[in-house]
Amino acid sequence: MAGFGDMMKQAQKVKAEMERIQAEVAAKTVEGSAGGGMVTVVASGKGELLRVKIDPEVVRGDDLEMLQDLVTAAANDALQKARELLTKEMGRLAGGLGLPPGLF
Image (cartoon, rainbow, N blue to C red; front, side, top):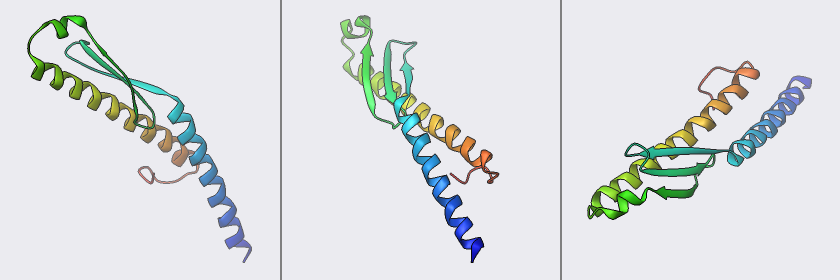
């Protein structure tokens, strides 16, 4: 049964490393933008929106629908980057353990 014990130790190490990576990624930020930078959104690596910056020129216009679309696009861009960051970091964990890509 020593093999099972070793497997359990390895699983605990993987879990601890995953938690460390998730905490590290959560502390990082990514930035998404739309409209050539007219709207910028900053998100955490956890995928939480932290800040929205809107160029005053956009607000001066009377096209509220365009502004809403730009905010949505910038937020989606930031959230996509947050997902990519987590996937990249988890991929490093899998590679470091000799696990097949895409496992995490």
